[in-house]
Image (cartoon, rainbow, N blue to C red; front, top):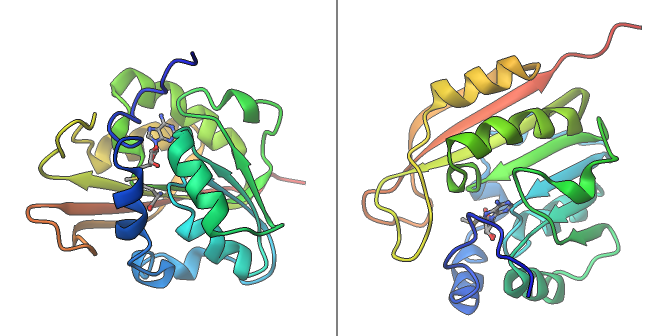
Length: 206
Ligand SMILES: C[S@@+](CC[C@H](N)C(=O)[O-])C[C@H]1O[C@@H](n2cnc3c(N)ncnc32)[C@H](O)[C@@H]1O
């Protein structure tokens, strides 16, 4: 049996309920504060912790080529069935290593980490950031959301600060492009607040 990727605790058991929940909001609602950072011309998007595929499907509909990484098999299967698209490649992989993407440095214009980073402990976040940064193309962006507040039963989650995330990103060559603190929860869950962060990678000198 394959070991469960740490951070995914609780997701397989709730996969059916989560489809209803995650698909009840639109990509535009979920990402209204960062939409201006997404290129309009077709580009390559990496969605890490893609869940039910809501965002992968929206990116594909915009004409982007998407690699959707989702380590929870129960979610990945539902997502692929819900959002069949030749523009989405589904990958069974996980942070911090992203081992299956190891050969693909600097390939993505947009790397999304929506509601996933706070599932990693401090050591895993330190290991993961340079790997994430390497996957961003020069001129590209990495977009994060960090959840704060009560941890749902059965989940593994840490309260991660914007300062720590920005510090790790800077050390990995990603500059802060956007920071929004204390954002409301789109799903209206009591006590849940969010930090939105986006980082850009400088275009390499010719
Ligand atoms: C809160 S859900 C968010 C799903 C989706 N991004 C969204 O916004 O609807 C978190 C997702 O991260 C995935 N996940 C948890 N730990 C992970 C890890 N170590 N690496 C990659 N994905 C992980 C879970 O399986 C789950 O699909």
